Length: 341
Image 1 (cartoon, rainbow, N blue to C red):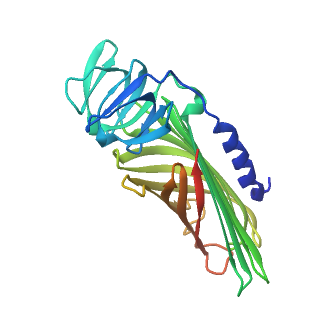
Image 2: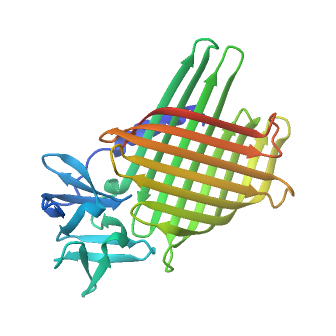
């Protein structure tokens, strides 16, 4: 498969999954500390924002700390910052900032700011899909340099797991040379009985002209943990093993077993303009090729311009001390516009 076709395929997929679907009637009530009451359908709480579908205003986002109470007769999954999960319905509260959940006939009070995610249990599959797509283009006349980039991610979460697909393509054209780099990452996190701990499986595809890499395929598994998970930020890490198969332009095809060390940090700012930071750092010390170390990193900053439309800055870096390229390193920074489906 030609990786240059990935952006078009992802865009088509995003268009298909962005069709609206109704999970339940818009009878939920959200009361703010200023006394305002908004009626709609609770779609989810994530990243400190409660998404509420309304008839007159569409889907709106409300900061979790601004909400005094919620009323709903439906069932939800509540995830706490400790990683613990509760399943039940919302009971009437006696004071602002109190969340009472009925679970298996027992009513429990949850710390309001300890709740980091809420998802309707009866929502359709399409309602659990989050997708983001961005594209950027630049042209420098003096050097006849053209740069084009595409990036997208799709996420799906249910009561048992979180699944994610990330892809990016960077194309550079000049008078004397054209280069490209592409990367696709797929991951799955399956929740365990231990709060904050999950089983991780992952796979990747990478191609990079700057590193003289025709392709690299990787797949592996490990254990992960959330070290920080609040309504404002999130930090996780994964330790595992992966097997890679790669082809370099001069050395041919090779296989290696390597450690998989991954960390990810996300943060949100809700004041206008809203900001979302997402940073991932991976380290891959080889087990079968002694002395070889690879690394990769991705940084994304997104500012919301209008509802669901973002200006973003994306940076990436790759390093391989056994690369066929000139320095073993490749990096880039790009800007563009993105849309959150």
